[in-house]
Image (cartoon, rainbow, N blue to C red; front, top):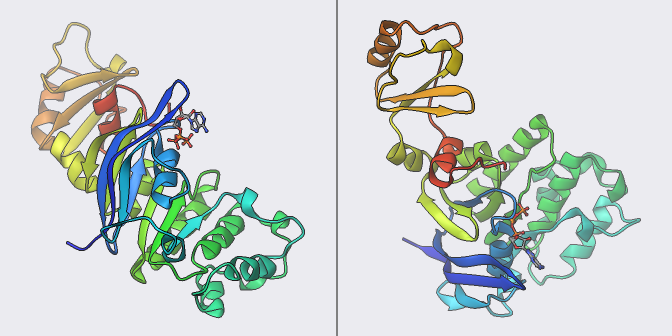
Length: 293
Ligand SMILES: Nc1ncnc2c1ncn2[C@@H]1O[C@H](COP(=O)(O)OP(=O)(O)OP(=O)(O)O)[C@@H](O)[C@H]1O
C-alpha cells in the first residue's frame, strides 16, 4: 500500500464544541477518499486540518509519512468556496492570478479543456452558473498540478444534471492519477466516486471502508418496502422486518421466499418496492437518524 496521507487521532475543539473528536484514517495514493456525514458532523473541520489550514487541538496529519511543512502547500490543491473569487475578474484572470501563487503549474490549455472553461474564459466570475463556478474552482484547485486534491462538498447546491457532469469531471481527474479527498452529504456521490469512505457523525468516524462493502457487511442483499397500511392488522412481521416512517422494510438475501411470506400473510402488494440497501440505510442503522437531518 502506498499511503499518501495519514490522519491520526485528530481532535479540534471550539468553545463548547468538540467539532472533531478523534478521527483517524489512511488515504492511498490514487484513491478517492470521502468523508460522508450530515451537516455539522465535523467534515469541513477535518478537511481543513488535512489541508493544513487549521491546526488540530491534538493529533497529527502526515503527508508521505512526514508532518506537514511549507512544501505541502505546493503539492496539494484546495477547492475553495466561491468567496475566494475576486470581484471584477474574468475566468481567465482568476486562473492567471492563482497560477502566479505557485512555482509548479499545470498546462493551462489542458486545464481549460479538462474543466470545460473555453467558452467562458472572458466571463466575469460573478456571472457564472453554479456548475460553471464549480468547474472554475476545480480548475483553480488543479492550477499547481497537485498530487492531492481536496474538495469540500463540491456539488452542494448544483442541479442534478450539473452534479452528474461534475462527477464525470472528478472521475477524469482521478484517472489522471490524482488522489482526491472530498466531503459530501450525498450518499449517491460517495457511492459513485469514492473508493473508500469514512462515515462521520458528531466528530467521530462510525464506519469506514469501501462503500458497497460497508453496506454489504451490514445488510442482506435486498430490502422489500411496503406501506405499513399494506400489512394486515394483527399479522406478525417476519423477524428481519423493521418499521420506519410509515413503511415496513423487510431485509432478505433472496427475494422469492420473502415475497412468498408477504403473500402468505395477505399483504397488499400494490405499492411493494424491491431495492438494494444503500449508504443512507447504513447511516440510519448506525446513528438512528437520517443523513440529511
Ligand atoms: N469556527 C468555529 N467556531 C465554533 N464552532 C465551529 C466553528 N467551525 C465549526 N464549528 C462547529 O463544529 C461542528 C462541526 O462543523 P463542520 O463545519 O466541521 O461540520 P460539517 O460536517 O462540515 O458540516 P457542514 O456540512 O454543515 O459544513 C459544528 O457543530 C459547527 O457548528
